[in-house]
Image 1: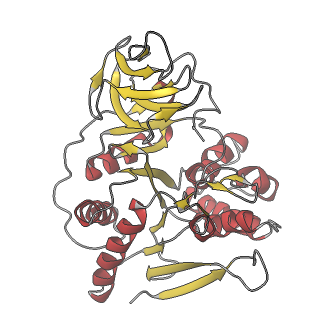
Image 2: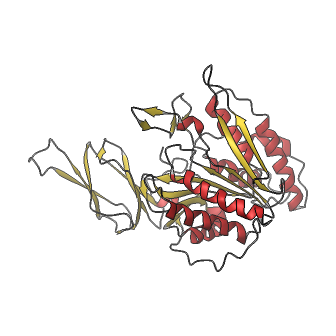
Image 3: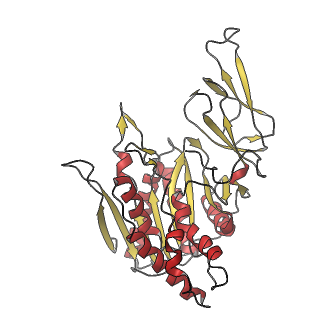
Length: 381
């Protein structure tokens, strides 16, 4: 059994209703290192929900055997609000219907809020500075006054994760190979996790924009290091990553068992859970920059026909898909080719095959930054 299981109530959205977060804690409360996992902040991304169940089973066994040396926190359902948003039988869990936008955007920037609380207090001891910063970040989020249910959800999740050494945000794409996002400042950890998971792409970001959950957890450390330069050493004490568990339809026990086992091995290699993880697998890929991802866009409305498959290597200028105009001339042959702007791996694409003008439909991971990709606007809503 978990060391503790708690429920965090969210503000009631209407009389007679309520929603809550369930939180499982394993190991020694307050022990180090601490790992935090959450699944499906985008509530229509279901694979993480199943992976979390397999991970909980593994942690149950490790707990029973006394093998959890640190602390592991798991939120198996990170977005009960989004899970309740159905329209005509379809789950729409990416955006808050009450108007706060994408559930994985607009997390509080705790570095800016905690800065004055920390100024002039750092020492020459890195470990002492880490403890001081963690305390300041925790106090800051607790003092963050909010009313809207989705904003309270964001703050509650961040409060659970902000003092963790490792943060894993479990997502998926429409149709995709397994890939992950992390900061370029934490390349080594990202490569190790990618090797463990067998990731087909590791996307390193500097300024993705939108303040998603992973950046809200890890970002304060490099932001405070820059703002408090000269006052004392600040290690990057939190590695946070968004793990994209393939596509929305990739929900099965074979995948989930393997993914949970890989995450557990990552914890073993970092002393959070005891046990022999075996040799680290060879990485399947080299990391590439997030601003090197070519996001292909539909020039008009029409039917999308792919000429390349997931996992294909695409060359710059090569046709990836064709856009068919069902009312175009000549009848049956009105097609517009859409080409890649970079050479790279086709690793993700949308599930729908009818597109609108300007719709993003496909991603190719290239090795070099692309001129049209703008810092601070790298994430696609």
